[in-house]
Image (cartoon, rainbow, N blue to C red):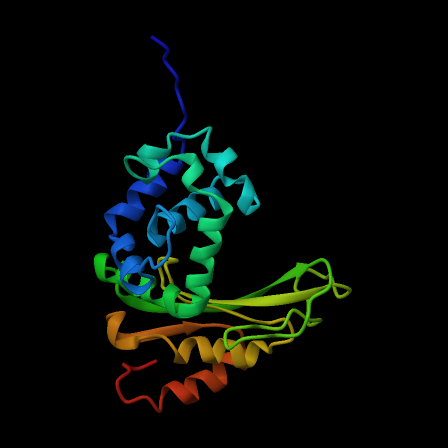
Length: 234
């Protein structure tokens, strides 16, 4: 009898938390499977999350090779094979995310997580970071597209094009809102937009909320938030 051992490492914990928070049900509700691949979009998204947290940057066609070294069924459910995680199936999942809206799906998942954890919101941290990229990029196309272009680089690579990511977390570091922006987007506008687009009625704010961000962005944000009658004192 041949005995083969495969490591779970930290990916077992990530998989367990994903299942415990019922994230898969929400994803399949928002992104129903309409094509002929074997797996639902939720399992393919889970596979991409595990790959990303496996400290490797795998191209889509290398996913089967990555999962051949892992206990796939333990991580993704019985009957799933490494061959199911091919670039065609993964690409269709990415297309479905794009069609629904990456920001909208992220926010839906964040609210789902908050509904499972009784943490509430006492403090919100907002900031942006830039990601420099190599190569040529065409202009934006499609309603959800951003522009990869020159901008204020936070890692000092003023010679490279970039995109910007804005993120808002609560006092425990749990992300409540995230959105990718064009490379020349202004922090003053993106941070204010991030605060204003949070689903305040769903994140269980307390009587007082502290907002943390850079001073220029925060000053205008507070003025706009004070116009929203459903908010507690900020």
